[in-house]
Length: 369
Image (cartoon, rainbow, N blue to C red):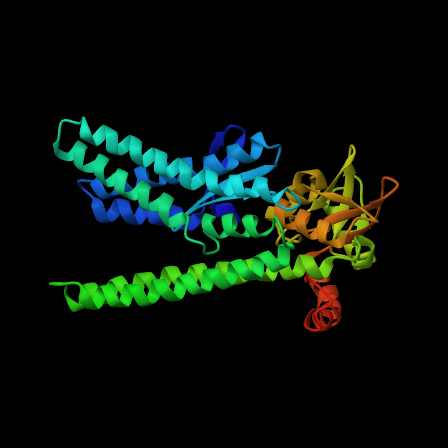
């Protein structure tokens, strides 16, 4: 579905991407609010505010010299793809805090504008945007992953603790917040005077959907912390695969297919200057007449740049690069030459073998204390 998620432009050099589900939300909102389109306008304005919230995270990161890959707008909000690994907890703290502060500030601007507006629909819209931005800012400060508040708490804890221990404590706090949120919503729905049974069900159901999303995000954060911890002590060389082949940029797709059959490999890599590229697309049916022109093209037209990492680099660093770059494969080099490749599934297989030893040491209190 990646191809259905368009990039609509750049702001401060940062790609802004609409997730395909967000595109569906816009279409759905347009159809529901037609012909007045007021509801559609509110959603567009709200997500413009969400974009500013995410830009606050991203710009703060760039000011601190931290790489920002892109901002993705989703039906449930937004996400900034930022390389937050191996940075000081204080930097992570301020980056996480920047978004909620921007939303609260933006809400105050809308509130002030509403005070001086002429009334009618304009005032109603400004008041609604004031309320939504305040909720966006304050709600994001709840200590629950993957909200900003969870990252703020983790960053604060990490000043005196390891990343894994800090994540464990933050996830426990996140789970406690989610339990209170569910209980509070049920109590509110039961108390709400004059509400229909359908409305009460809707409030509780919508809260449960949000809670399930937040719980999944918290567990993903914890799993990620465990993976990086278990990868410590291992190196890229421990997980490399030799199942790849080297081709030249001038290799045609026809020649590539022949070589694939001969070498029985499915990963084709070539050097492009000082960088490496991997062939990412093969012709669906190389024997069809419609594919004849494509078969004569060079592999350069069907490739993408991939990150590279040193043979002696830590495996945790390789994992971070794969995740941040969203790369299907990473080139492992030694003295400028490629000696192997890393694929996420190979790394996971290695960690599956390595985890029992680390977990045993963890239970005995030899780690993370």
